[in-house]
Structures are given as C-alpha cells and as structure tokens.
Image (cartoon, rainbow, N blue to C red):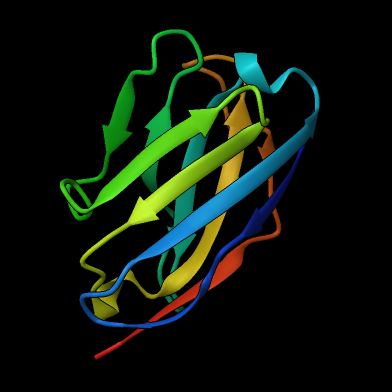
Length: 119
C-alpha cells in the first residue's frame, strides 16, 4: 500500500485559493492512479478530481470543473489540488487516495485535511 499525508487545508474567504498537497510513501507512487475526495458534514464522500499515472488523464466533478486543477510530481512523490474561486459549498474534509488500476477500488487513503470557505 501507499502511505498518504495531506496538507494545505485551512480557512479562506469565498473567491480565494488554496493548494492541497498529498505526500506519498511506500508502494511506487508513480504507478498509482490518484484521486482527491471530499466529505462535507452530513453528506457522502465524493470524488472531486482524479489523475492517471500513465498519460496524465484527468477527471473533474462538474462542481469543480474550471476551478480546481489536479496534478502530480512523480519525482517528489506528491499529488496536488489547486483550488481557485472557492465557494462556501467547497467546505469539507479533503482526502487523497490511491489505487493500482483504473477499475480498482481506492485502497490507500490519507487522514484528510479540513478546508473551510467563509462567505
């Protein structure tokens, strides 16, 4: 498995930006399919963005398309989520996760980082 540690969360005003980081160790990070999830109070966890390891193919939820950017630096074993034009509804705990294949379940998870957007 991959060990994942998120950082970069915090409190920001609506319209502001944050960049989340996810440091990975253990199993070869460069061959992991990575994703960012979030879970708001009383809501189910949702996939926000994902990126493949092979060709950098990206996926974004409709709610963040055009505002969030997922990227990875395999040399640094780090996954990023750049979040711009933040909205109060983006408030949630954000988790990074890894899986070994595009059809596999996400098997490795970080502990989460809180993002709070004030109006």
